[in-house]
Image (cartoon, rainbow, N blue to C red; front, top):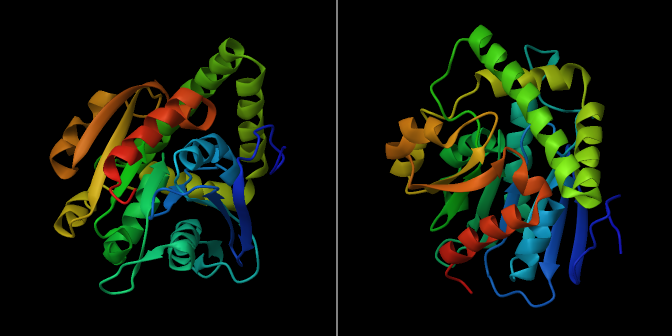
Length: 288
């Protein structure tokens, strides 16, 4: 069975879709859930919820309920900055808050909703900003940051845009090579991911690029530690944006850095990358 326009079969279990003013929420509950706390999958720049179907399926197969977010831009009432420009970052952060408040599991002691979180790329910055304001969402849990961007000190805007341009070019080449080497299924996933990114254009794309290039969670990481929110970085050896060595500067600001093989977007396209992430979450979660 195909769903969400993909060629990935939907696992058995419950599949729910909820539409909000500025995002769509996809919730997959496995037929035999074995973990109490759901996993929130937070996408990065220009990524759709469907980009993380492989990861969601792998987590479902291991008994996790998953929550995925599809941001919806350009709708009436979206947040603005300087009166007229769309505030893409604020929209994303509000979507994360609403998703957790809607589908998170209440803590026994105070009723606050909470989740385990896995982010990709710029999703690390988006969720770090949320966690600073809402540490209760991640109480006794952790944030896993796969191939995170925006963890180094804030660079100059010009320098950041140059680095982003070079990294984007290499990442494009990496995905083309992956599609050529791994066959039809992976090629179709890469093509679908690129098609969504191309549709995501205009002023919203420019605002998100600016935030991706210049935003930084570097100063937020110590605050997360103070609030006792665990953060684990998953560093990919062939990441065009951030090499594993680039995270040495934040080693004392996070709770762990693990290293695995793969390109920046491996978790979107490769079953083995999804299996690696799912095993990490299994080792962390004690509710099974």
